[in-house]
Image 1 (cartoon, rainbow, N blue to C red):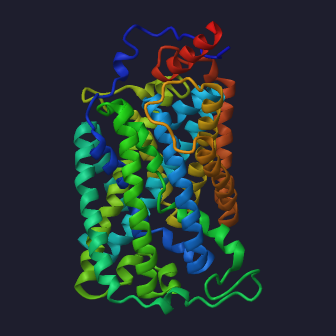
Image 2 (cartoon, helix red, strand yellow; image 1 turned 135 degrees about the vertical axis):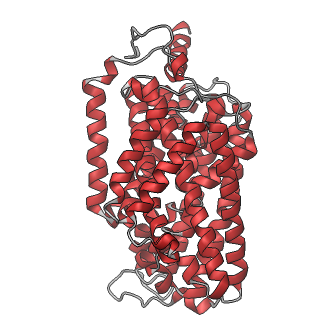
Image 3 (cartoon, rainbow, N blue to C red; image 1 turned 90 degrees about the vertical axis):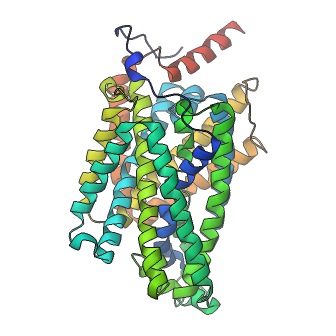
Length: 469
């Protein structure tokens, strides 16, 4: 039997926790998926060249792209069957009960709370390099972006998603401009300009750090696609979510596969693997003159797009967990514009505090830890639901079924381990935070869940159906 119990709340409990319905079609959802990720094309991925060289990062990127494609197809199925604001938490709650649901939601929260902090440090770097407003100390930038974009989100989801779509379109134009300019500077010899490590097994010009370099490069390859799994978090605010959420996430994945290939080959081939790997602004440094300046400004738009949209994701994940009682219920109260006020503000305060580390690469690895752990749990959820509930209504079905998501599961496990290879301390801090959340659930919140919340109702209905068989 489920551990969920009815909570003695007033009759207007859910009325105070309503999101605005029907604000996004599949095109806007596809834009949301791209915006989550597009900052990863402008900065972050390039440090993987110092871990695996061009060959190591290329192979890691192919493996990770295949994992994300398989995972997205699995999530498209689950989001069509269970369209709720909890996204991955909702899927895992149905498949693995309250413990599995909260574990998945917690891993996603770790990813989404930390990723904006990493992006904010990159935004600060861009602003300083452009000498905008004479700013030379990044914390003013970090504070400004958090305050401004939390404010926009508080206005409402429809307005926020439309603003995000415009910013994302600008960022995509920037990648096209970069691609055209970098093509003229491309030199295949620069792809392999990192000297091979003679002590590394399997090292060569193509893979200077050998076979282990591929594994170490996995977390940086993830940055090309990190957070696309957040599209289902918009399910309750989407129009016809059963069809539009799967369509949106698959379309976004198609765009991101193209942008990943574009920047990996052209940036490295224009500047060299060593130079790109060491750069804070790899696309800008790969160019020169006016074009570099243009891409630098547009790159700032790309970083803002991801920062802005991941705020949306963390607020909806926190909203769903709070509404169901897994976290303090005050965090899911929405304002007059149907935006979850405290679910936007509290992670923003935590993220702003993390920016003072000034270590974008470390924060990136921490975000990847949370992401990869959530992927493991979500793929297990898909497999469990396919095996245990074959008759569940699924408007969209994953091609290849559990073979597809089983492949994604294996790569996700390898990715979790890879975060310890890159930065053991950062990964351990994330693991400690995860354990603390689970302790809170075990000691307190599992006894105070809200049976009437949508995610709990999905699970309870499944249990009733099972008992009637």
